[in-house]
Length: 317
Image (cartoon, rainbow, N blue to C red; front, side, top):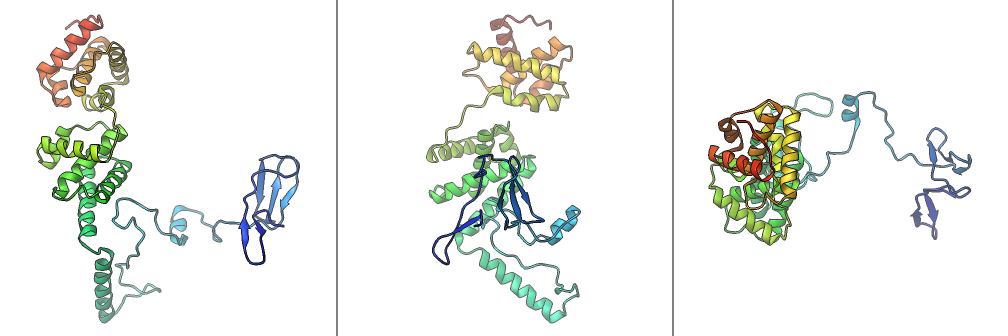
């Protein structure tokens, strides 16, 4: 009897995946696809002599062959309104043998593609979703955000649509707010000021929409820590790993002393970098650090004096 299926009745196979040897109980099972056998590596028992190979029937020797021979489509993605499950008519205007189509056939394929695109987007709701996802993709590319942030942003936007939270609000502002929410959730150091600068929207409006979505979607987001900004600021200031590590130690000690509450995380990160740069011997001016952190020079000066005083750090200016 097959190890992959046990017959229940006449025409109702029940799939049962074997995970251990029935003889010795070992889970070290080997699959011999040449003989079609499932073998226990410990005791040598042939568990199944009609093992089915679930892989493709073709072989590929490089990435190009693998892509050309694979018959499955791309993985599902939240960045497409239909999650990438619908079909698409090719734009090549060639037949199955690679020959160019005639003028009449090209015109026919053009009409088919046009109606196929229209059929994929049915209704105002899907049309709005297409616009929002396009805006999320554009904004994420402009800010250099990775793919998983875009995917999470699209997922949050879909939840907002399902709860009817978009009505009466600008699609672009909501798209900006969900992208900021995804950055907060995934620990990507981006500030509201950066989003406002790229989108030209009012910072307060983006923040108001973000807080509304967070409340309505019941999202529990941790406050942004200044430690999250250290790597970004150090990269822009071209500082080494020693400065970043020492600045992180300073902020961790300040967190233990409960000195971080009620203060802006970017200002604290800038102050810690300023102190660490002096200690390591790779200092940057307060003006340059303030410019990178998007805070005032006065903020950097006040924060570094507070940290130095409370943590008993000697800073030779």
